[in-house]
Each structure stands twice: as C-alpha cells, then as structure tokens.
Length: 271
Image (cartoon, rainbow, N blue to C red):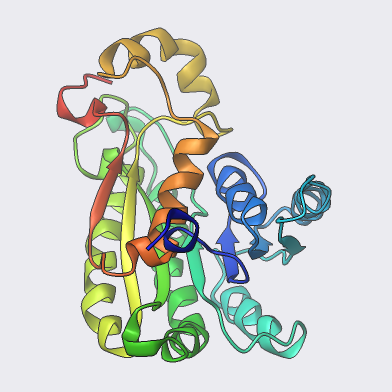
C-alpha cells in the first residue's frame, strides 16, 4: 500500500479530449509524465500534433507517450470514428481512462443570447460526451474486466465546472446549464456502468489558466483570486493531480462523485 503503487497510472491507455490546450493539456502532461500512453483529441489537428510532439520530448525515464488523434467531437460520426481508430488503426484493446474535457462557452446578455449558442454548447459539452462515452464503453469495459475483483475499473473523468453548481455572475447560460447536465449525466453513467467495471466521476473545476478563461482572468483576475479562500487560481499540478487520483488504485472506489476542484471558491464566491 505504498504511494507509488496507490497512485500509479504507468502503462495505462488514456484518451483526453481537448487535450492539446489549456486544462486538457495540463491533464495530458500529468498522465504522460507518470508513464501513461495518452491519446490527444480535439478539432485542431495541428495543435494535437504539436502537443503530442512536445509531450514525447519530456525528460525522464518514467515518462509515457502521446499520440495525436484529431477529431471534431461536436459531430456524432467523428466520435464514433475516434473509437474505431483506437482499435483498427492503433490496435488498442483496452482504454483505461477517458477524460471528457472538450468544451465550448458562449457569453452574451440575456436579451441578446442566441438560440445557436444553446445548440453549439449543449451539443459539445453534454450530448457528445454521451456519444463518445457510449462508443468507447467496450474498450473501457475491457480494461475493467482485466483487473482482479474490480479493483482497477475503467475510469471516466468528466470535466465539469463550479458554474454547474452555482449561478455564475457572467451571462453564460448555455455553458452553466450544460455543466450542470454533465454532472448529472456522470452520476447516471456511474450507476449504469459500475456493474460493467467502469467508474464515472466529475471534477467541477474553478478558474484555471486557459484560452477559454483568458479574457475573464484578464478582466477579473484579481477579484477571482480574492474570492478564493486559497487566494489563487488553479495550477497544472492541481488539474493533473486530481485526475491521477481518480485514475489510479487510490481512486478505484470513487464512483458517481462530483469533486470540486476550485480551492473552495464555490463556497462563497461572487465571480
């Protein structure tokens, strides 16, 4: 029961959607640095290839590897293609960890909020999470079945948001609704897939440095830090560490949970 074995992800096969940039990149690097094979998928093929190349150059003998697997995950056919390519092109027979991180946001005043925003945000942030997870379930199930007494199940880690728990000040109606829906979907998946050797959990993330958060942090960064009991925003180690816990033996008995990863800001925040 030593730390190295409890939190090990060495040799695991991981897919991180939106894994080339921002929070997804932090998570991808955490897995690669700890010996996992990480498939990085997002719509930006160039960014996927660049991220994979950079991660494959990380120093250290214990590092794993990264593979670019670009796809527009807002499209049903693309989600199913990713699942097919993992087996047919890359020869994978198991997927130990699926990190559903790809997402979109849209901010506009209430009276100006367009119908198209709902279609775009809900499709990518919620509907296609179900589509991709559904398509990858056989590979996740195969990973779980290979563990003794279900002690190393397949893992689904859904990247949610504290804006799916609280009502945000900013006018991001579709985003906060989609994340609240994702939190609940994750629980439904936990109940459905637990008997098949797969856990499903959510990280309700607070502010992290990313392209999506860049403008907000630029305009309100000081206020956001002041509203946080820890007085800061998230770091790569925070994002990677939480995922490594949920993906390792240490987190094997956590199922259907929504863990806030925000330093406590959701308790009393105004931003």
